[in-house]
Image 1 (spheres, rainbow, N blue to C red):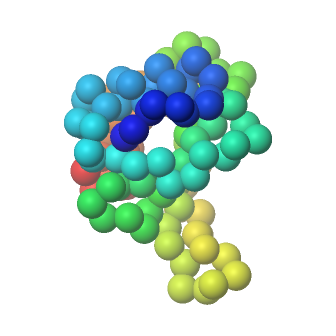
Image 2 (tube, one colour; image 1 turned 180 degrees about the vertical axis):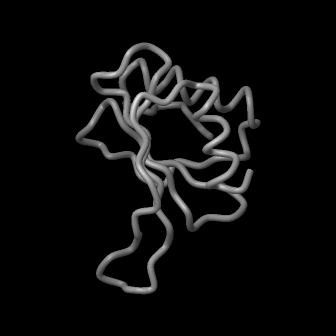
Length: 104
């Protein structure tokens, strides 16, 4: 992911840097910046877009995350369908969920 010029809070920027080191800079892409929220971001698989994962850090302890998994929808009015929510997920578990849901 390209992080230059990204306007997000420290917890999200730190997470994205760690994900780049773990998966490589070309594995993930930012699918939605959620510009109004400094503590969240939406990511997808850069090579197979479609499924997304919302990651939030607001109110979480360091290196713990809130996640929402979404699948593409066939309806144009609703672009994604919920596919799971997780609260207080460790970084290690986040990596497992990302690998599985985004097929990395």
